[in-house]
Length: 384
Picture 1 (cartoon, rainbow, N blue to C red):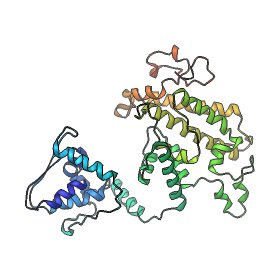
Picture 2 (picture 1 turned 180 degrees about the vertical axis):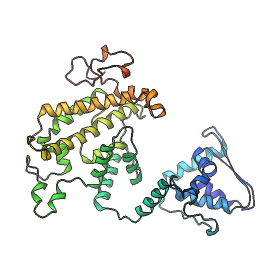
Picture 3 (picture 1 turned 45 degrees about the horizontal axis):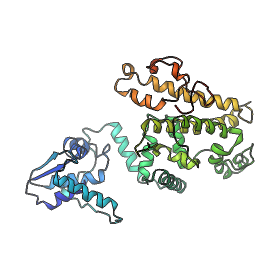
Picture 4 (picture 1 turned 90 degrees about the vertical axis):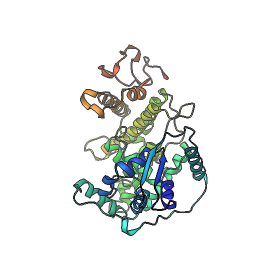
């Protein structure tokens, strides 16, 4: 997009300009969807900060501006040269910021009332108010910790927007309750520990009644014996190891926050989609289950002070099996049409995980009684 803006700035306004690009997205945004984007004030368009000045330049030009899509990496001289320069630019440590100067006569701000919908108006209001909200120190600190964890594990450093997008928009692998749990975890808004210590006459609620320690989220999820953390994480680890998923040496709350962006790689360095989905599903559900068991232990009247090993083991297996059955149901194209889960993805995710797998039919997605096996099941090998 920066290259397109540069070309529009360098070519005289009265001259005809023909731009060749291998980006279909750029052509769709600047040609096919330009009217819808401007009418909605770019409410549904990403990288609006780049697109707005480009459209401004296009409106300012007197000559024709046309676009042509070309296939990338096909030895086209100009395209290969552009890719080479882009690769050099991304590897440079350049802190210079580019300023786009727009002509006020062609700078269209605001949405078009004739086509404005309630949903679009709400989105624009939220976007405007979002810029006025000050960043919370604890949120920014947790985002930095999340970024450091991803850097150590996957050798990449995502921006804050990428972290939030991975958490809030993965509707396939993360339920709304787990997305809310992760959102609160990064914002540090769970009602435990320091939340109560700042309230007069409620300070005792910040201490774990079982361990007599400050009840932080890290203590709840990984240290508290009353929540059977060790047993639940051991079961989760066995499930992942059956899929040949290497277990993380250090597991803490920052790892849980970074979970939606972590990838399981093959021996060749490529992302194993099925294993990545299983790792995300099992670990996120395990963390959320421990939080629910803690709340049940403390808040439910008449419940015993410690979660029993049997209850914890049954709960984690029931949770994983419910997710397996949900994925199997969601593969039905007859019921869910285009929204159905791809069968290959579900097969790739849950292969090697099933109890009595050698006795199941080949098309087990539609069979009854399909369950995830435990590590001590003699009918299931530890690594399929």
